[in-house]
Amino acid sequence: MSRRPQLLRLAVPATAVAAYPLWPDGGIAEALWFALVGVGCAAVMVLATRRREAPIRAAWRWFAAGVALNSLGTPVALLVSPDSYPSAGDPLYLSLYPALGIGLAALIRARSDRVDWPALIDTTTISTGLGLLTWVFVIRPLAADAELGVLGRTVSIAYPVGDIVLLSMLVRLLIGADRRNGALRAVGAGLGALLAGDATWAVFNEIGWEPTALVNQLLTMVFLGAYVLLAAAATHESVRELAEPRGRRGPGVTPVMLTLLTLASLIAPAILALEVWRGEVVDGIAIAVGSSALFVLVITRMAQLLRHVEAQARKLADLATVDELTGLPNRRGWNAALASAIDGARRDGRPLSVALLDLDHFKAFNDEYGHQAGDRLLRGAAAAWRSALRGVDAIARYGGEEFIVLLPDAHGDGAAAPVERLRTVTPAGQTFSAGIATWDGAEPSDELVARADRALYAAKQAGRDRTVLDAAPAAA
Image (cartoon, rainbow, N blue to C red; front, side):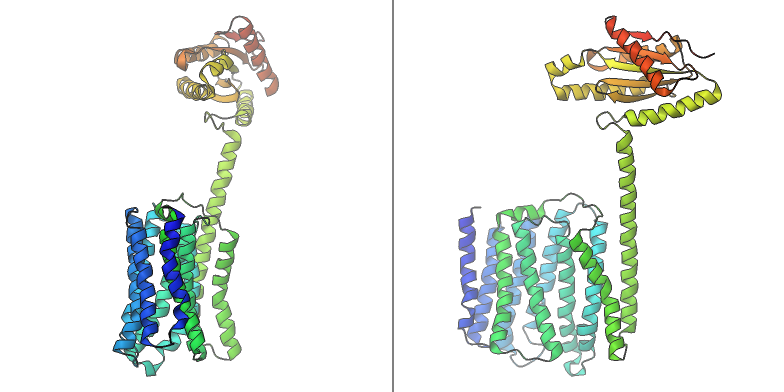
């Protein structure tokens, strides 16, 4: 979709938002204008995503339904029950929360092919902290307000509960997301504006301040701006990427997320300190429950991070001793295995031989067939040779096209026999030269390998495709 149609689709609702202050505050014309903008933005969402993938269509239809119903609440409340609370518009206002929640759930499910436990724990930690804050300063005071009646208290409490649920789902959607995605940024900004507007009203109600007509219009424009931002997300060219599965996020914590988790964990002790300072702890049970939940979540997150660090350490240790191309031990891994084998041979008085193998004319093979074919030959030879050796033998990649084999309990022809068997399984019709040396019972490991290397050189000088035994005698 080109950018021009996107801008044209958004020009009308954006202009309508700018014109909102022209209507008299609190009048039916203002309420109808508010509804017109909301329904218009909802229509843009549906039209812009009607040919998108199923998760995108489903998500934006739910977003559109929530925005349309929410915007219709204002004229319905004014026309049906202008002086009552709850009003006839409250069911329409409240419908925003489940509709947006279902839409967010569709996007989250499309982007995650499995349960992302680190993201789930981070989301729950932030939600728990904010939920405790909302309980103390919003929900509990509303629940104790006898003047509202049962229905009034229920409706009043439903708003902050819906905000917490939406905020939790938004955090879950944003965790690990590509911040460069324009559609995702617009969704985050739109939902953030809705939540900010609700939070501002909650603060006004908490302090008992009646906003002026200007403030009331400005706050209403925040909600209209949120509608436009959601419509902008639907029209953005990157909207298709919102339903693409993303790679599984590691359990690491970014600096931003660490800051959010820290602030969420400090909410409970901060509330407790505030109530102690006021001289009465009235939310002791809620603070205790919240603190316990946050403690368990933090410990669980730390356990995940520790397991991740341990797994990474094991992976790094493996990478330090394993050849990436063939999966065989590399020279570092080989050196450790050889030192251990020499210690065992010295202790048990048994022979030990080492064989160096070099694929013949490997450079010419690379030049003719390409480096990818050369890599396939190395991987194939490594796999074939490893499977053809005796169970007690060990093979490693020594470097380039050279491999080295550890042959316990073998010397002379007994060491040459398993090496000769490898010729029959070498892939692509290739040949190799080999040099074998048997430990003399006293020499260091580097000298043993050097003798095998000299024998390998002799095999190459003699015409390749053969095995040469080093002439040094084995220890008795």
